[in-house]
Length: 284
Image (cartoon, rainbow, N blue to C red; front, side, top):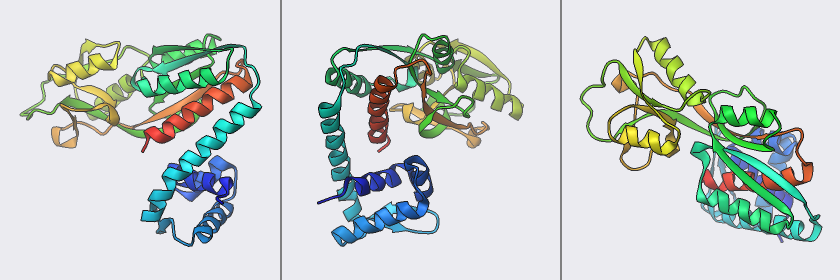
């Protein structure tokens, strides 16, 4: 039989892309994490990871086991929640940044509320800076937001490149001044884009002020304006511009989970775990 602790360590090493970060997340020493992986490999009699000095990759057997491991751990959590849950009574107000809203996330939150009768979940969509200000004022319990540089403490869910989005059609030359499609302040993408352009000495103008990712995409797809957005948001019809077009590199986007101090710890823990699990699957 598989040891759930060893499976959890294995999944964390894969998700965190390394032993040191996995050790930090699990509050273990790096040698303990290595020991867990070694014991798991000894139990099944096959290697799970190909290790080098700088990285590790899943072996074919590791690829097979990781899917089973996630399912086993999810069943453990569900069983524990069903048998130990307390009757939650109250509302959890969640702020979600525009580029994070997905139907699968909302379904996961809906399933969480169904497991805990008496829990009500309210979701508000806005830009991260506004959501964090609302949380500080006591209007939100959780915020899932994207940041370029961690100015606020929060749990790192994952990170990816921020890119200059433009139509995938052949490009001869970018207009001058550079037309931009931006969210209003306080937006981390806006701030990063304007800062990097100023540092590079590139003139720009705000050609379109948007309130949604759909607006940014429309502006970029039409070739009306260049839009800074997370790489995973590009999709069909869009391409990332870069140094070949004379544009400076943008910083990585960090997606983080923020928790209010006034929130009910038990309800927040339940909802936070759903979000963390969702993100671990979304990253694959």
